[in-house]
Image (tube, rainbow, N blue to C red; front, side):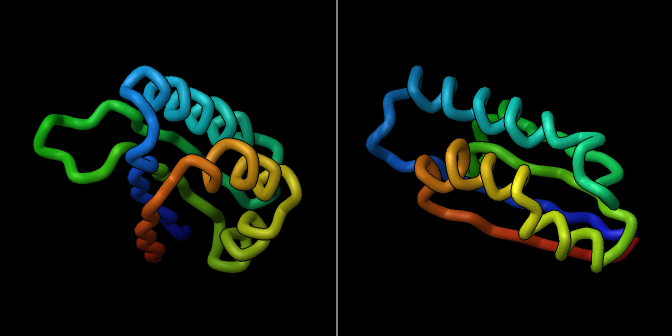
Length: 100
């Protein structure tokens, strides 16, 4: 099993209200992939961090294998969400993938 953790920061140009809407769209889009991509075991997006946080939101996902994660990254459904709901609005992305 492989964990895929992503932390994002949203672009500064957005108001707090816009950021909340963007985060909700990212959450809906990514969590909506559950059951649609082979090898994707679990996917959750946390949009509510404590004030001590340095990231705006986090993706916590699990895959059956490293190969399943690789396939997810190029899957058309994932690419659609990434290209329409994530990449246009984020300025920074950090990733940690590891075996569990």
